[in-house]
Structures are given as C-alpha cells and as structure tokens.
Length: 71
Image (tube, rainbow, N blue to C red; front, top):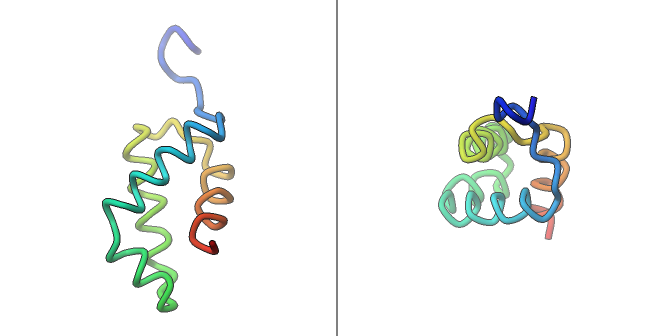
C-alpha cells in the first residue's frame, strides 16, 4: 500500500497544517459556514481532500475541521 502511495494520512499535525491552509485560502466558505450554511463545511472538506489528493482520513479530517471552525 505504501509503495503505491495509497496510505491514508492520519497524522494530526499534518492534517491540521492542511486544514489551516484550506481555511486561509477559503475565507468565504468559512464565513458562510459560520453564518449557518452547512454546505460550506462540505466545500471545505472537499478542498482539504483535494489538497491531500484524497489521502486524508475522512473521519479525522472532519473532526479536526469542526474543532478549528468552533474555535
């Protein structure tokens, strides 16, 4: 799995760095989410998955993103 580059990214530090980049690059989506638009959250998840080329652990990514947006 590792040799083919299919390993999931589960390192919290790496995922948090990616989330920080996604939030900085998508300020409009962050504002929309905080205004109550749930679809904006999905857009942010999509951008983070795109940034990791789909290798991020989706559950962990969702949890970390929710925590970042709540703070």
